[in-house]
Image (cartoon, rainbow, N blue to C red; front, side, top):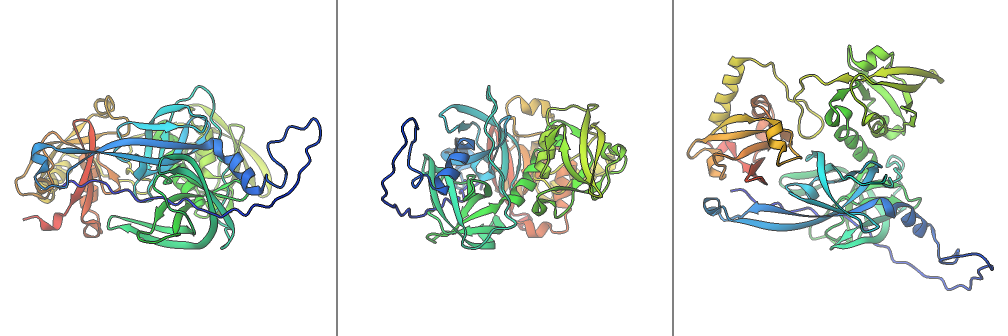
Length: 468
């Protein structure tokens, strides 16, 4: 049956502060909120980052675990909370995907108390990251992004988050270890995490892990069940690489540039051009593999996320000035953005689910979907779906369910809208067939599915190997 989501908890950190007594004399005419001895590096780091950290609240609806609940459609309302970080002044916020997954109304509160309703821009369930957006009248303060490539075991770190609903709770600790793999559940595994000693509290998910300079070096994500003082964070280099894909202008604006960063660009703290798509705007502009992009649209570029941010709000056909370092010399190029052609993308960020459109192929896809899942599907136009659901680009309406099929056993019904399988969105038959035809398909079972029912997001797990 469709099961409720159990959120992994994120990792705030907790230091014990040792206070030193001192007598401080404030010169006449100077307004001071504390002596220099009290204004430690930790205090300055918190002051620097605090305004760019937001609190997230929301409610999602899940079905009862009772195997007969779907007959009476007995939903349960679950309140959730988490934390987010502003990564673009226009209101783009990164957080954990599990914080906003299935939430119909994402409520965001800034450090100053202003409240907004956010929309989901895109998400990556595999790495448990999502980008949401709020619309504010003024530009928002952006977190200072550091690097996780030079982290040292034992160095101090700070976390700020919505612990147990207590907004902007500050804790601190040290880097306990690096490159950890953590199994949170049968369906979720995190790799290459930062381990930190921590006071672990629900609600810190999606919040920043800061270094002593106030730079974000990780995003708190998980706690080891049953453990005390052990928390984990996604390294910021990895998180920002994912964020650059989630915030790509192709995904958000529908325009393309054709640039792909080099594999090691994230850890090098510079945007090195890796591959360039043939006949793309980047190829036509004269960009070369190995170029280091230093500015775009007169904005400094350090990583791929900066490049995508610089191109946001620009349309196809617009000319963007790009400055690169080539052979240690600056070179200025003109990049004319192109329009997006027909592309079928995954719901996460890495793999593209494509196939050649042909009527016989669609017939074979439909037959395989019916055989394996027990579903007959029809495409729901994205425009129709977006009237009530802004976080989905499209879906497949369930028009028939085969009795005693994997879909029927999990409570999927006629009228539901299938919007995702595992980490992939399902906006066409080709998308669904792509997942079913993968060589590692058996390794994905039980496969998580996402549906809309009465405009509410629900999910469960399909065990296709049990089909008769």
